[in-house]
Image (tube, rainbow, N blue to C red; front, side, top):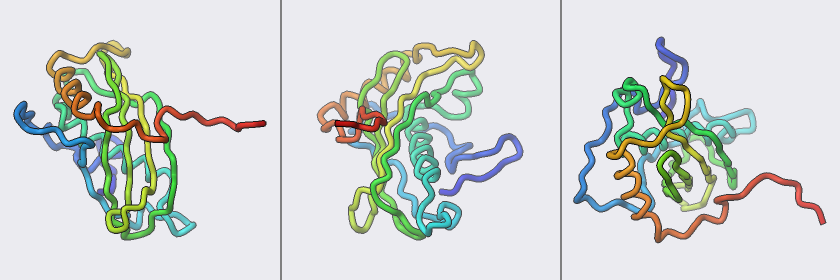
Amino acid sequence: MAANAGPEHGLRTPLEGTKAVPWDDTAPIPAPLKLITPSVIQDWVDYNGHMSESCYLLVFGDQSDAFFRLIGIDEDYRAAGHSLFTVQTMIFNLAEAHLGDPLDLSLHLIDADEKRLQIFHSMHHRDTGELLATGEQMLVHVDMNAGKSCPMPVELRRKVEAIRQAHAALPVPAQAGRNIAIRRN
């Protein structure tokens, strides 16, 4: 699941070039979604001997890319001039991941409206179940030609709403909606 450099642009996701998954209205929607299960590779390990902080976001980004393909966003969608952009991210690093550790990721769509999605990633150690990190992101649907946000097309919005409804019964994670602050007495 390592990102690769390509001649067209710098960072590439493992799913780059993969078509969106055909949507099946009759298929149950898992709550939360389990989209990727990478293991920590050498390129993600830093001088402290554990997964580097930037690589938590890299892995969450790879899961977001899998989510995009689930709802119909792929290279063809982007070539037509639209995409989802991340506008805010909050990561909680809760425990260390080390070289070779198998990771179990999940994605919870907390909320969505016509232009925005609030998603929440959880990263557990696949063998021990220990929660290693969480990542919360606000995504906005963008018209890349106009350079501004815009409503999602009806078909994309329908898929997002189906997932949001399937995830509505999940408890809101403890780390969701938090901000950074030095709390003083």
